[in-house]
Length: 205
Length: 225
Image 1 (tube, helix red, strand yellow):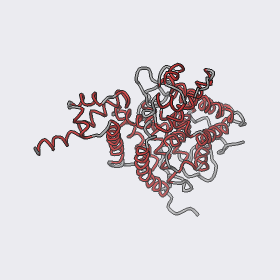
Image 2: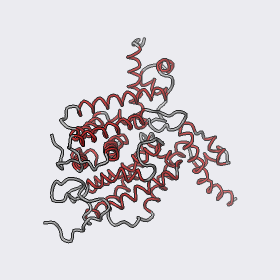
Image 3: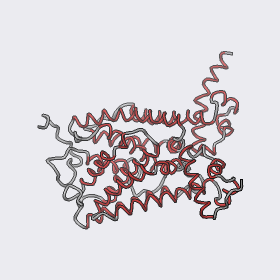
Image 4: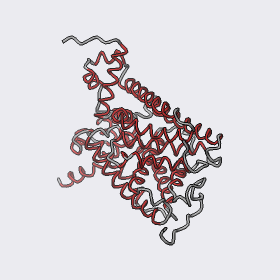
């Protein structure tokens, strides 16, 4: 049966989707380019026309995931009326995204471990840096508006908040059977953390 | 004859130690059984006598690493005046251990990519569940002593703490400048606001953390009405 010829962009996309399924199912090391090609219904040489190697393919996939995740979170944050409410929304959005795209986030985290082997992957590191920067700007803005207490070190606090956001991804990526599927309890912890620096003691709006 | 057998048995830790170094240096993919055999000073055949596959060997290494991390933390609890201080000390001890054992840190990060394998999944789940159980009893003690808000769910908090351990391990593994204080102080910076937000709410919504940093919380002498 003749395989349908797809335009390059569509072919790339279908390979990325196949890689995501493969990685989420088998982990990074057990998933070979041959597996990914088979999953995409193509031969390995075709895969190599679109990507240099497995690392290149995985890095593209990670980049795509981060873009989707960031866009989703930012869109929801923008609807909020103040920075602290925005941060709470960001945590909820992150939670919702991992629920909806569990295998996407799994594929992302499974593919992280290639550390320090000749120029390691930037995406996971850059993502954390950007997230951290965004959170600390929002806290500074809340302080400027008199909504967060001045005695809080925005940069240090930002890391606590990022840690609380990040564990949701990790739990979901590992697929742990933990009480983490309880969104209300999670958001209660987020609320507590943000309220502790709010000048009114709670999150408005 | 008997001697040969016993020396064979003793090779297991030798192989695991060599494999730990090799996997940490070259990752799972890059480290070959031949590399490991060379490092251990034995033949590939001898390795296969102890471990049926590279995967099995990797699992043995990973178990070794997780056991070491857990033993480091729970050998004996550091003396602390309350839960907040104890949690801080444990986090710092964890970070210090990871810093002193970069090879082990690498293995922890590497294992996450293997979480897809079913047996690993079950293995890591039970390992973490044991730890969460231990931490849970510490959280319960924290609630009892009045350091933590009684309306918090101890099981949930225990999992949050376990996962923050993981997060810190990851950050450390990336060897980046995270704009955080270096080393174990990073653990305190991350934990301080979170722990403060778990303190009992003093007379409803007040500004700032309910427990001033550095001061021991007042013990509740009688249950609240």
